[in-house]
Length: 501
Ligand SMILES: [Zn+2]
Image (tube, rainbow, N blue to C red; front, side):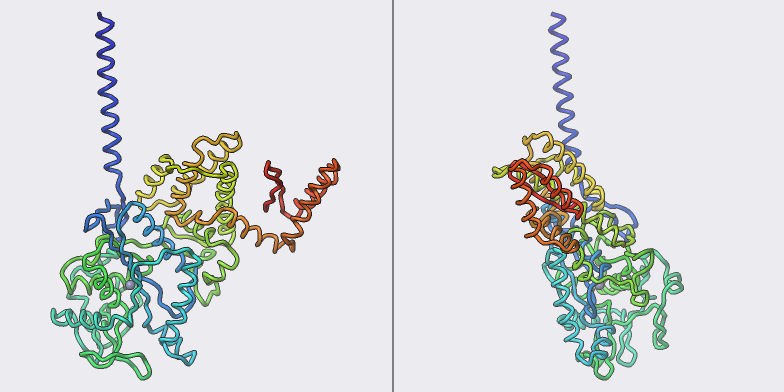
């Protein structure tokens, strides 16, 4: 009797406990939400989109006067992964990234080359598309150009003028920074500090040194448009305010760009847009960290600028992606070729594992991705897009999968490899068939060794032949000969395969 009562109590406690545990699990899933570090608040904040399941994001794009370099690639890849992750979370994402196709640098370049700024812009936009394709970037929903939004820009300046937030001096129009008391809130500095710390264009006609141009009178031979202030062209900052509002409204959710844009560009965007519409421009401000090369800032004078195409000539695009994602997007990166080489080898290790799995499961049946790594991935990415930790998870998984493969166990392999691919996709990695990646890597290597596929295949066939004739020593000699040149042979049930050491 007593025994039965105790066991009933135990059963009740067990039931209550398991209900509590389930409840806790549900809650933790409920509370698992994306945290984003916003430059504006200087801390991580829970991400709550302004309109239900939709995220509106604007990222400042490139000024098209020269080839994109790896500093651009870092910013592009940062926001590509943020875009992919928001989609992974099932948001409907409206991603807008502009082209600055009107700028002093473009005009100067056109003059140097004796052509028009339209021709310069068109040339580098075309090149940008080739680079972004090679980098595997997802295309934004909108890619507006400044020159195609002059009416919107003029309307915005008119609005500022009507509110007393713009003044004209001989065909130039300036924004009076002193009339916007919140100026400096993004960089969290007072205007006096900004003035002291920045190189500011000296112009006697401005009321205050921090005032910036909304509209500039065009000089002879420069691109120009008719406006209420005479023929001229927009200042740099106003285009982003006009185009973000045009495609996303105001306020929108996320505004992004490189850390170098915080001041003055983003500070000025905030001033113009918020002075015009009296509501915040964007809710979260995301900035990616700097990229140095061998501890120095990339610059023309130091000759340490690597263009995207130079790097992609030598390395796999996924190697570069992995290299950047192995650091947190807000941390500075000191770029080195050696680091990039290691990153490429790391990607190869993942592909090799996927290749092994493919060989074990010649016809993968329908399967759902395994929840294990997906949950961990979400936990890490929800913490301000922590890609280095997400990548560490991938490598834990790769090690564990290799152990299973070594032991010849195939249970759950299909579901786990599917999950690995889903995680890879969200980071923009592992999107090629493994054999294709491995082949590309091999091609590069054997070219460096002065070998060809045909020669290697010939040697493998020769080795098969002598082994069939039981001339094992001769077989080993061929294996050694290849190994000396960095080619490793592996005998599998399906025949001999080779790879690069
Ligand atoms: Zn911008």
